[in-house]
Amino acid sequence: MKILVGLGNPGEDYMTTRHNIGTRVAEEILQRRGQPYEERKARSIVGRVRIGDHAVIVARPQTFMNRSGRAVADLLKLAETGPEDLLVVCDDLYLDLGRMRLRTRGSHGGHNGLLSIIETLETQAFARLRVGVGPADPEVPHADFVLAPFTRREQSLLPDVVRRAADCAEAAIVLGVAAAMNRFNRTPRPGAAEGPL
Image (cartoon, rainbow, N blue to C red; front, top):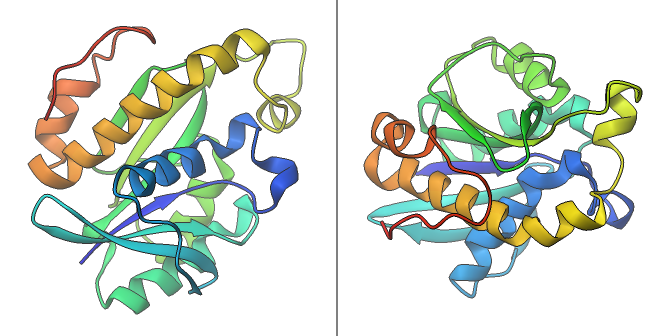
């Protein structure tokens, strides 16, 4: 059993913010399969799908970002698995909008959701897909930037950004993180085409 977690803050007030792009990616993966979130478990709203040959729990934590680790720990217990089967999708304000960085492990890089997961699981050894929402405005505090909605121009690019990030997440599950890294870490700017899986 694999677990894909789309990080974000719960509630409609946050759905259009940069910090919730992980949630949008998780929802895209479910929508492709006509599968809505179906139940509340493990401090999350979850759906269950197949991606390739893998059974996958797709989850949207209902904790706030800085407490994401609690939900992720509960999800791992629910799936009776460990961090090696976890893929976390989150925003990255240091990457330009639509750029992606997929890694098998690493530090939190200033992201409070990743920090919470690392502290709770007591390991950095889990895959994470960072989706660019930058560049950040140097005049705006980082917390204000990620909690603000996308600009009108950014909103026009979002469907393509979310689609490509979902493609990357699915490739990481089907092909493995290393193969997906080779393909998607060189992501072109939003609007460029990528071949099918």
